[in-house]
Length: 142
Image 1 (tube, rainbow, N blue to C red):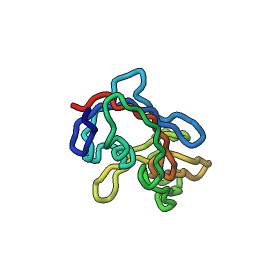
Image 2 (image 1 turned 135 degrees about the vertical axis):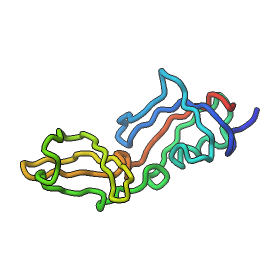
Image 3 (image 1 turned 60 degrees about the horizontal axis):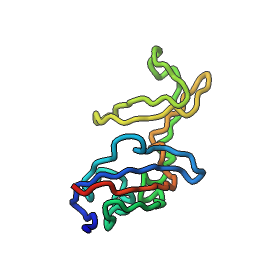
């Protein structure tokens, strides 16, 4: 039986959880994830874990932050004065907003703190700095 290798198009079922066991994503109960190995479509540690697997094989892997969404970067957290934001902008904790950089590139920030005069925005990926564990099952090599 063939093993998955870089360049193969594959389908996998997966379930991801944090160190404390909290689930953050899963394909279980739905369609498997389709991707081409080695193309940067998923985090590096996930992609690398599938290489060498055979159809029907399952494994559990733990991926450090460096091979997942990277470390948290304090400089990506900013506190702004509410008066500097549009007055009609609805601000709630956990809300994600799309912001455009000076160069015109959009990115997503999350509202992480609110006071009467300030708003704290975090541009880190929500899973940055976290160790992730995945249960993976290789369903198909196309």
